[in-house]
Amino acid sequence: MPLSRRDFAKRSAYTGAGVALVGSAGVLATAPGALAVEPGGVDAAAEAAVGRRLGYGPLVPDPKGILALPAGFSYQIITHSGVTRLESGETTPSNHDGTATFDGPRGTTLLVNNHELKGPRHKWPRPVPLVEGLVYDPAASGGCTVVEVSRHGDHVTEWVGIAGTSTNCAGGRTPWGTWLTCEENTDRAGQNGMTKDHGYVFEVDPYDRRANLDPQPIKALGRYEHEAVVVDTKRGHFYLTEDAAGPNGLLYRWTPPHDFRPGRGRLRGLADDAGVLKAAQCFDSGGNFVDDLSRATRTGTVYGVDWAEVPDRDARTVPVRRQFADSQVTRARKLEGMWWADGGAYIVSSYAREESPAAHDGQVWFYDPRRRTLTLKVLLGVDAEPGKDGAFDGPDNITVSPYGGLVIAEDGEGVQHLFGATDDGRTYPIARNDLNIGTAEEPEFSEFTGVVFAPDGRTLFANIQDPGIMLAITGPWRRQRRES
View 1 (tube, rainbow, N blue to C red):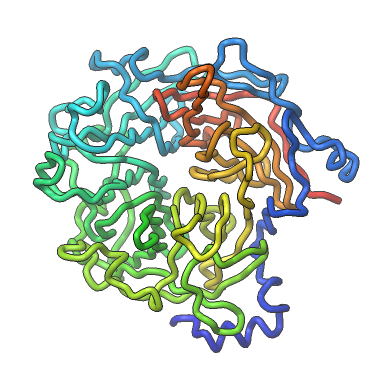
View 2: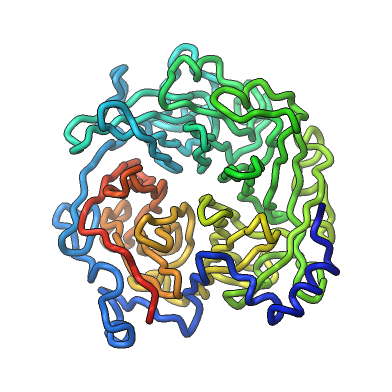
């Protein structure tokens, strides 16, 4: 039963315009007035205010010029495009992106790693190799690799999980132990040299290589510029983000058929029109429709959510996001990473500019399916000097930390970080990309991607997308407590 605008307005009257409907993880804020991190380390006033150190201390420049970390932390390079090799002999593909971890055999960790490679294969020096039986479209350059890392990181094996897909950006881990890889590209057969339609989600099994043979798109989840996906572990719904503009993208929910039983390989058997795909419609505490998420300018803002059915999920003639009038759905610029935790979905809008009603340098929302509400947890104001180290902007891939709060991969302007956000509104640096792929006069630093903890919580994995480096970060992790 949908949550009507009248119901949400009535509920908000008892909760102070909806602000008290904040989810269980509390408000994560980096808006003006929140305690923030100054360049080079933790804000001294913030330390004095809370009586203990925030984060892990200042970042120490890396003499190898790759990754700056706090004192006591270290990193290992797990894969490096053009340097490390697959078990089949080819070098590791480039452009690492979304990643998930799984418990592997004999104490190892398995990782499925997307490679965000768009367009025909000749454009890229290191596309995902076309391994027989694992290819969807032989003209496409993207895909996933599976990486097995020993307990101490002293042995690494990598192989292809899927090939011949396009622009594999983010995705999501399923409760049954597989990876859903998402194509952020909607080229049709005949466009840009492609031989098949793109814009789909595919399932990759890190445990069973035979399950990955003859890859098939999960067309029930729609064809559009997919970014990330999470699965509601209680209700079985899938939530999906769309990174697109002109018009801005949408947040989707797929409801499986009543007789669907989730599990390994079950998605492959779905009919193309199985279940129901819908797009989010938000409204404020007064029952007013909200056309774009950028209109929220305060953390703690809560919107009620309804869902509008997608008319043609395969977008045969019109892209899905253009099948709705602006008055029918709520849009957002660069809907990116997602993570399922605390009974709901954390959802990133990376930034908003002139294509949106209001500008910002990043939002993180929390969707509570029980309350059917979307709450703004993190808000990054526009940084006037993005080239200076210190401020954070452009959140992309995210994960919920076993030590509390979020860990966020930065895909912004200038310097790039991994940073943490506590559940009471403070931020702190965890790592900085020191690998300059530009020049001394005009430095350039690639985005971080694929941030995710190992299943035991001891190692944080993350990627530098260009040239494509997977890193394992270890150190004295500890819980980041709320301000007392």
